[in-house]
Amino acid sequence: MGASTGAKLSGMQKQVLGLYRGFLRAARTKSPEERRQIESIVSAEFRRNSKLVDRKNFIYIEYLLRRGKKQLDQLSSPDTVGLSYLNVSNPQTRNS
Amino acid sequence: MASALRSAMLRHIRVPVTETLTLNGSKWNLFNNVRSMSSHDDHITKEEVIHRVLDVVKSFPKVDPSKVGHSVIQRCLFHFPHPIYSCLVAEKIGKNVMYWTNGGIHHLDGNIVKSAFSEYSGYDPEQVAPDVHFQKDLGLDSLDNVEIVMALEEEFKLEIPDKEADKIDSCTLAIEYIHNHPMAS
Image 1 (spheres, chains in turn red, green):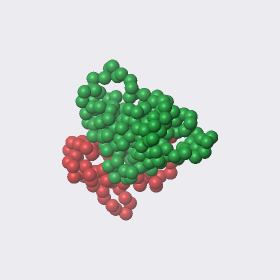
Image 2 (cartoon, rainbow over the protein chains, first blue to last red; image 1 turned 60 degrees about the vertical axis):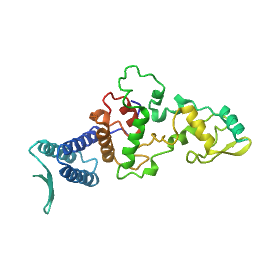
Image 3 (cartoon, chains in turn brown, purple; image 1 turned 90 degrees about the vertical axis):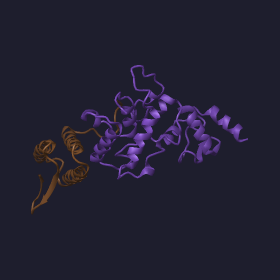
Image 4 (cartoon, each protein chain N blue to C red; image 1 turned 135 degrees about the vertical axis):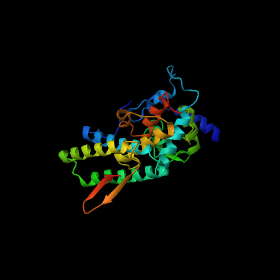
């Protein structure tokens, strides 16, 4: 494949995009309604963090990645039918 | 008169296919290659891939459909050798083109450009638009990029591994990848 014109992605950026892809893949396996719900929550969460988190804050990003992977594992389980968002004083995502 | 002009123009216009189509460094000369290893020519053609990739991209909610198009033609025109060579304010294909030579400013009828283009590139100009970069031309971010590639996966019933998917950042690369994918349908 030819050289891409875009900026090269760092390893961490690739991990984040890979995680995002993983969530979208997991969402496909759910019912259409849940899928839309999951996609909008996940997309909002990623975008929120992409603005909120300083790109040099590697430790925190790593933490988010780990947390995301765990959440993805849970979501990928066939027993999990959907995802809902709980807004307490501190915003948190929870699988239901 | 017009046809004489047309043939005169065509004699001067050379669109070097391989060079012109080496956009973004990707291998556009695939058009003319015989893909001897390929077994899927029967059920999905390049044109169909282009058409469907562009449809997916245009229907992406954040994309302005009118932006998906025409930049191939514009760049193509910049590759016209002498006498049109150094010129060129190209608008859309089919529109008239203004160009400068030693002799002054000239106007080139858009239809001539169009037919020259399709004659030399083998493309239907109306369909051409693949040279669109998701993030640069369409103002998307890398997350949108992921979403588009996922949408393409679904459209063509593929699974694109992360390593490849990260590289696909333009319609050109998407078309190239999908067209060469044996499972695309």
